[in-house]
Amino acid sequence: METVLELSIGYAMVCVLLAMVFCAVRLLVGPSGHDRVLALDTLWMCGMLLALVLGIRFGTQVYFEVAILVALVGFVSTVAMAKFLMRGEIIE
Image (cartoon, rainbow, N blue to C red; front, side):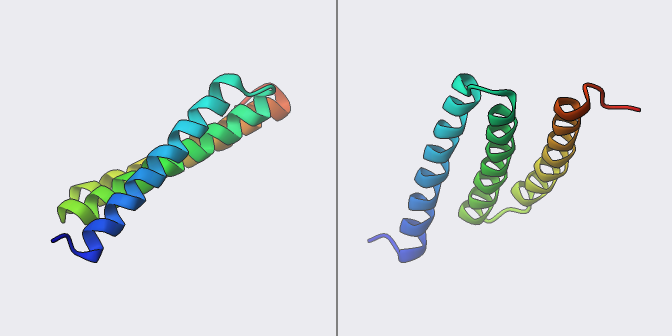
């Protein structure tokens, strides 16, 4: 019989994957650039959460390090995209 933790991890993975699908649809269909940036921001957050859930599931530190890297790269890319949409250039 599965434990409560295993069921919770499975449920969390399904929810995060469903959120990633919705974000990907908004990224492709989004009517404006601002919607696409917001979808991309949410997509990398979901990727980070998926890495954290997998780290809990498999009990290894590698997934947590991957989650930190995804968070850093995602934050920088979101700031760059938002600045580009606001001003038309990234480096002033």
